[in-house]
Image (tube, rainbow, N blue to C red; front, side, top):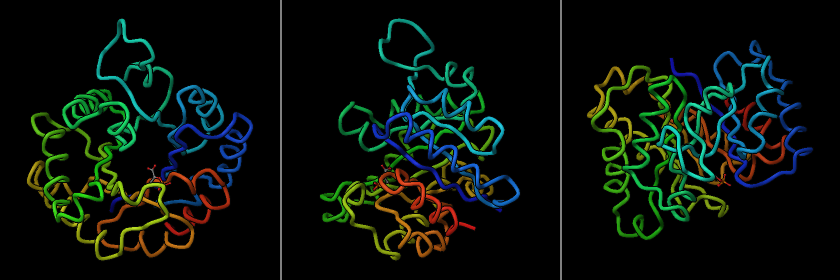
Length: 252
Ligand code: PEP
């Protein structure tokens, strides 16, 4: 059975005290309280070591929000996969829609990052999803299929537990608008089918597919119960621990 993942994406939010408060409060969930759920925090890079120190004795994971596909060298402002690994972190988000929109991330660069992360046994949370215009033109499946195939074709995955897909329709991120149960169900099923074509059915069954897009305490239970939804990537509602806690509790 696939363990659920509830992952907070803090983006460029929270001061150190607020961040620390959320991390400390997350310790109310020891391993035995969540046998079927993993908690992850995708934190600003500057807070990653603080988060790692705080959560070292817990089962919760710390991710960075992006990583370079270069090994080392003159890449000012970047963080390498080896730095993430050596710092004791568990992985990275890849190709969040805001990275695609503002930082020229594309499916090919995303694929290189995912390969690097998986090669050193880190978690890669690969974010995909269509924009509103594509949804209106009924092109959402084609977009998602291309995002999957361009990034994930052509390399071997050793550990499918560490490859995580986050389906985040761009029109639902930070907008308060949530995809309907039917839309989520249809797309997650489609993604599993595409993963099956890429990696075979048995391996595709091991990959967690998260939903992201205005997930909050009021809708989390309904979304998490949808077949082929293995948890959530949560932006806004991960910034208030009480909201994040309610979403975690919905996954149990
Ligand atoms: C996100 O940034 O990945 C996200 C899903 O944000 P929000 O929950 O605020 O829509």
